[in-house]
Image: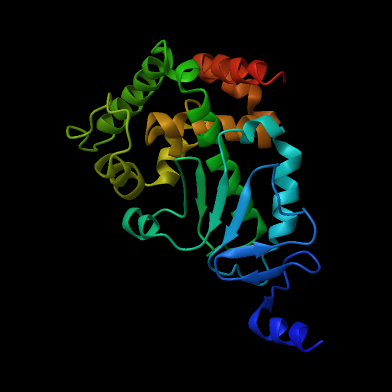
Length: 244
């Protein structure tokens, strides 16, 4: 009995986790598997989420959206602050099989969106050759981005320093679209071209935002098929590879 009391003093029960889940920095010890997103995926909590954010509920919702095979390239989810979040001004990222998510979440929906989006990047990495091997997706993306830049130039924006063919993430490009133009205005300009104004940031975001919307907003599928035929066919190919 004394041993149990000592353990309870050293470990903190986290209210928003499932019953009997025990939280301590750097680990998550579970007596049930509610938070084991998919078999083989470990969840590590380095910084506590806000009390009103229910991790178990979010994870269970994610499990209902994606098939288990979408997690084959992922082996860990880490929740907590990362230096890259501060340096790049982001709140989530996927790297080397690990999904990093900030603990600073507004609500369940905020956490859910972050996790879903980064899983899309994991699937992208898993099927990189199928997505990018023939160069067709890059061509579609560049053509659409160039069209938007021409529209912005005609509206008085200085786009001379923005290279439409730059596929990778660029702080300069991101700052131009996010800060100089603004996503509200960009959203109005691109609403018939991109599924989200953030899609124009890089080729990887072009893929991830579309793949995310395909799964969590099925009503956007006709728009994707019409506005981004190459991208849509890539998504359908990946789904077929997963027997979906």
